[in-house]
Length: 320
Image (cartoon, rainbow, N blue to C red; front, side, top):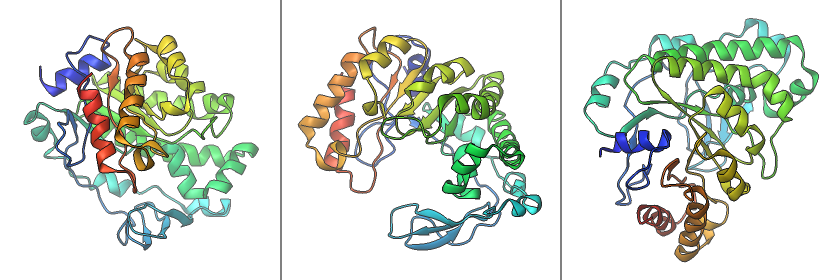
């Protein structure tokens, strides 16, 4: 069975011979998931990311990183005042100048599950454009300008998802962080009214082209998992250690797959290998109790994460 077939079986809730792994780190662990090389237009991009200092992204947001190895924060949002909105335009040239000409060849040349990652992020992009504090105030006030901003960002991502859905990738990736340690960042009701419809549009496009949809969202997201299932998200990449894993398994097995998610606040940077293996076994005992399916193992190697613990994580899943 190829890696692509293995991942698809897991997402379709068919029994797999082993747990598929997404391990993009050079630590000697096999990787069943990959992404194609491609190029986007630059837009307003200036400077280098993940380097101490400032840079500007394609949308014109000014980022500042206090140290190497971190993305930093947006310190100068281009729509800090609503008076800036009327003259702002999304960087559609980024998509118009995109070069995906080699994507299909790369997808055909590998047996891995192929997916373009870390794109489509409407909620985060709105924060970058307005500043996080401003956006949360906006979500309390719900002025007409907020709808205009959402629809502007959504139009960009609709084009982006269409562009990728027309290639031979296996999956479409959505990445918006919605959770704190214990709850959503906004009320589930507001999320359903304001954001759920745009995610459904992305899922509908993907499924119309036969693609799977994986959504990444850090933190506690349990309150909206039924909504993600309803709109067609196939797998969620979230911090399941913030939630009741037994409950997640009992309620959602066979409805949505769990694509990774592991404690990177304590275990990966500060724990030891035995603790990591024990936690993997605990997760597996719950998530796989109805059969070896519905799971893709993945964890994040954040700054400070121990390579030995990352390796222990993947080896534990590989041996289950």
